[in-house]
Image 1 (cartoon, rainbow, N blue to C red):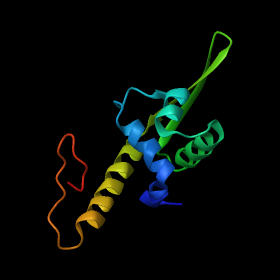
Image 2 (image 1 turned 180 degrees about the horizontal axis):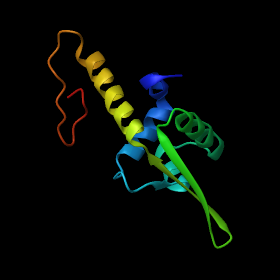
Image 3 (image 1 turned 90 degrees about the vertical axis):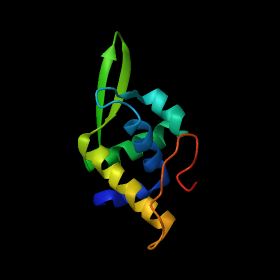
Length: 111
């Protein structure tokens, strides 16, 4: 899978949306990300592997005491790909001759 097409899978789109909402320096703990996107450990791990292979996320595993901790970040490449994906979705929503989609706080992109 290449380009933004990897993001058109709904779970991966949700993962990237959650990660892009974080600042570039802040990652999310695996457990917090799992709760946000509503996936099982196995499903989230699988999708993260796909996103990591294309360079959209960075996964860091470390031990805190004797407990493992996994943190996940959106890379700059991933943030750029997510923005392109959102642009593509907005084009589809508004149609080829429609007005630009405006984003207002508290409203969906479709209005």
